[in-house]
Image (cartoon, rainbow, N blue to C red; front, side, top):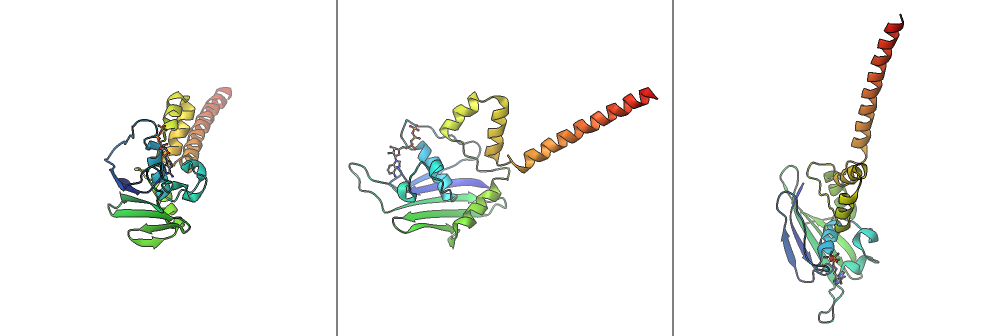
Length: 193
Ligand code: ATP
């Protein structure tokens, strides 16, 4: 899956509708402190049905709605639309919208769906080659400072392969080691005869 475009309206500091094009390859978000870099990553997680307060830096669900400033009144809703292309090259548009007092609603290609359906789409995509791996600001410093083994773990986590694939590779390497040990043992036993 490849994410092509994002549209944010009323999401955290993105009070006015904002369109962001995401070009192929690695995308970095830069800007001064407090300009909304982390909010942008959170918007991507949020539209993928993320609800954990920790990864959204929020207390309640409605905290993602623009809360107002000294000069601007708060908004009643927040909406994020993610335009992507799936592995078959078909367009995939996912919308999440939250209204004060009404909770979240999701749409995939214009059809109403459940949060679970959206989670499943991205859970599957996380295992693909173009996995939507999101690396937050703090993580970059962590990746640079990490020891090689820790770095590997972080990258595998980001690639969504920390589970099954890693266990399989470890098992294969143990198997190769055991085969080498067996061959050596046979040589030694042949020497004893
Ligand atoms: P830094 O580089 O300091 O980490 P950043 O570019 O990642 O900053 P964010 O943390 O994404 O910036 O944005 C913080 C800004 O978003 C703050 O000014 C905060 O007031 C604003 N903000 C967060 N939630 C809301 C909200 N619900 N309504 C209005 N503004 C919000």
